[in-house]
Length: 57
Image (cartoon, rainbow, N blue to C red; front, side, top):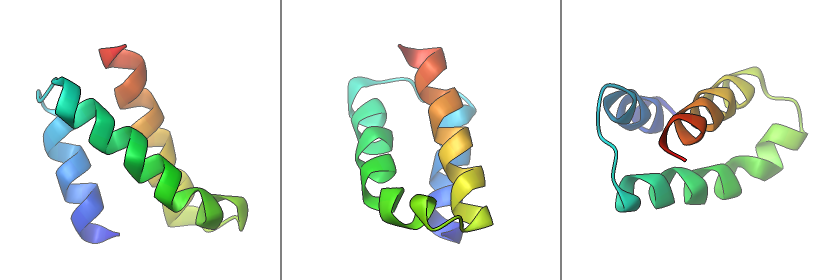
């Protein structure tokens, strides 16, 4: 998850494109299984992704 967090961090700092948005949507879909299991780091990553999507939508 460290690499995903780093990429998401770069996006949060100013990458706003359709491709970046779709990558975040795809990432949230991929980690949904782990999010449902209550893994804390995944919940944090998902919250950051949701916040990113709220800014770019």
